[in-house]
Length: 241
Image (cartoon, rainbow, N blue to C red; front, side, top):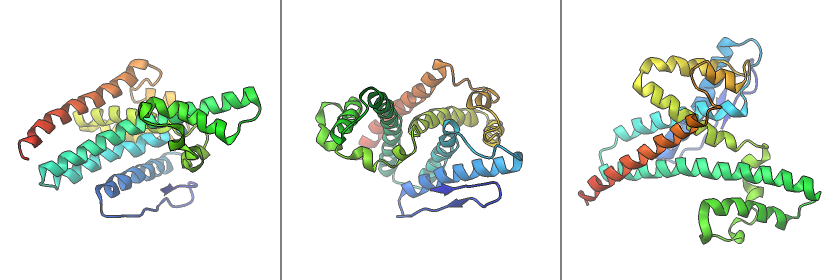
């Protein structure tokens, strides 16, 4: 995790490493938070903080660049393909699972207001109702017994949506930078605002309208293109086996 408490204190990253590629992407993720904090520190006297709507944009932005760089140092094409597949499904999991968690939270509060009390069994059922849309009929409620207790980000109300939102926005920022490296200045600008503007204003300032549904569909389209690329890679890899 990355700890940044105030403008007057240093930013710290604490991480365990087990010599896998996830170490690289995790470090890149947390470093994104750190850079976000440091750019605010240079730009702001007040409003030094980030909202849920921007917190996971900077972190997920750096992950793919670090992942691609790590893969460039590998020579085994089958291994590279396997890592890319894992990375892709991790992104799909992030979008759909975190969205399911957000919908669970929303339904949890709605149902509690209506009933005034929810038992543990009731909460299990509410979570299952959302997660079965993700996992399908191969699951049952017992598979998710107590999942809502051990899911740490549920301790921060309505934090989960920021992962799905952050990943989709970061995909657009990555596309922007890969097509024009000078666009990195827009990314730096975004990370320098802190809480001095609303999320809508922050992204509008760099040419992104997060209130436009078409923008979100662009992020989904980029993932679809990534999937098509993996299908082509699969046929090439099969020739090596």
